Amino acid sequence: MIDTTVFQDKTAVYYTLGCKLNFSETSTIGKILREAGVRTSRKGEKADICVVNTCSVTEMADKKCRQAINRLVKQHPGAFVVVTGCYAQLKPGDVSKIDGVDLVLGAEQKSDLLHYLGNLQKHQEGEAHTSALKDIRSFAPSCSRGDRTRFFLKVQDGCDYYCSYCTIPLARGRSRNGTVASMVEQARTAAAEGGKEIVLTGVNIGDFGKSTGETFFDLVKALDEVEGIERYRISSIEPNLLTDEIIEFVSRSRRFMPHFHIPLQSGSDDVLALMRRRYDTALFASKISRIKEVMPDAFIGVDVIVGTRGETEEFFENAYRFIESLDITQLHVFSYSERPGTQALKIDHVVTPDEKHKRSQRLLALSEEKTKAFYTRHIGQTMSVLMEKSKPGTPMHGFTANYIRVEVENEPSLDNQLVTVRLGEWNEDETALKGTIL
Image 1: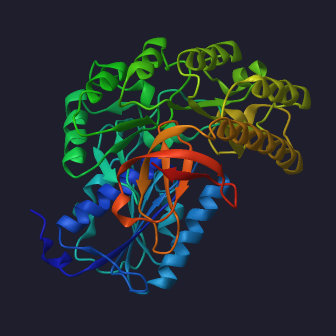
Image 2: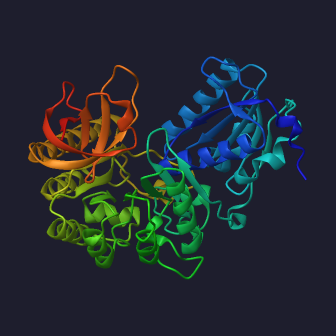
């Protein structure tokens, strides 16, 4: 039994770096602590506990984690500092040596946070609890409300792909998931709490079902039946796992939105081979074409990495032309970062930082061009928008089914409400279309 009396009237602050999955898991950690008697500290208040959920996807991510930890230690002197997440799993020794850190929890331990907190007495030196990669096996459920209107449902964790540039399988372990039935139950709970939109998150969500003998398509069909949830969004799915039956189902579904996020990583087949990706550009192009065939107004976001080892100028130019040819909406562009322990370090031809920056800027300009064209094409249309709470005196924002950001005059009663809006011209800073509520 855990003695929770030590947590009564304590306060905590939470800081999350990285992906939507991390944010979902931080919310679950917060819920665990709240149920033990810990409240979230108010702005400007010194916290008793600091929880930092880290990312390690790039060298810059590691640096940001260290900076965040140091900043929180200074802002909350005397607080019990807990660090978890991918950076904590990959480099527990380094993290435990950071001044002020008391506890480092790996992928297998973070959901059992209460078991490691003890009496919240500061440690002379950080104490690390992590498991070997082969021992990361449990699936910790998480369905949490974000800062706005949507919930994030963790459906899967870990990855079996081992792409040459990526450390995520080393930080998250093997692919695993909960059952379809448990996911449906969590969605029903979210609906009962007033949730109208759920984003499905995970490391490689298309791989859902490996540990339960089910499939991601089984999950999609079951969630579509949950009453009360108006919208689902698939956060990111590998192109080789985005089957035609899923695309067809989404095109007919009332609840799954015409919004896809598909990692490409490179538009060069030569670079995709070096990355050990499980598809080629022909397959990727066929998926985009199929989506647009059955959902012409679908929003399609695409991840791209520039400057990986082996990406010659010729390969990049081929990639650029391929990406330019795709009917997509937005690019998420990342500069390659060398990660210890990855196979990519064995590849010849290193791209200079300056060249990475140039390539990144070219793709970002292309992305802006495609996004603006997509938004502009919808001006004058009437669409349903799920509104999000905003600060008094500032405009409200929300998203259409196909993820167009819309700005309207502030009306607090519209928070978390679906409203019919006519889309107008761009707002002043061109981050949204102005909308007129009908």
